[in-house]
Amino acid sequence: MSSLLFDNFNKYSRLTEEEFHLIEQVLTRKMVKKKKNLLNEGNICKYLFFVEKGALRSYTIDENGSEHIVQLAVEDYWIADLSSFITQTPGMLTIEAIEDCEVLLLPNPELERLYDAIPSLGTFFRKLYQRAYVHLQGRLHSSQRVSAEERYLELINSQPKIGTRIPLIYIASYLGITPESLSRIRKNVYNKS
Image: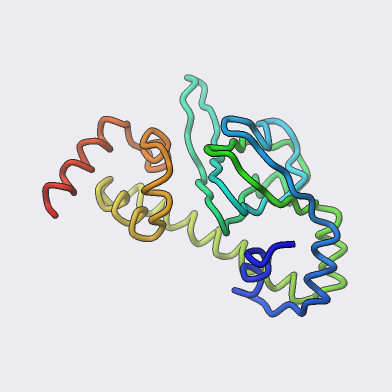
């Protein structure tokens, strides 16, 4: 089905082709048009989503109606409302396509069954969840102690596809700054180079 997904799994574990075939049997491919949602806030996240093509964002809306982006995902990334997925309770996030997307859906109940059949799959997702936690902790630390310009530079250096494909208004929200502040930062960075 997907050599991109096979390579992704093999970043943190070693799956045989037979094991990967078992995983493929429970996956569903979904085409998602730009601006359409994969998940709405308040719904239970029943799937982990693997991005084969396109870009997605997860976000929450505060009491003033402002969006706050939690995650940006392009090809070879996983995205979900992990809290909702793990607990199978109503979620806090909306997941929306920024571009037309091809996404693979891995359902929660089947994933739980696959953990028993493929022990290395449990290792993969444990490492994936650990990295997600470390990344979240790093973002929290950066938001409190690092300048917006440094956060922007870290983002575009660590994830260049995001810097070139994601609308600036979404990047600003992800960084926790206004679009106007991001424009000033980009101008300043450009003038320095």
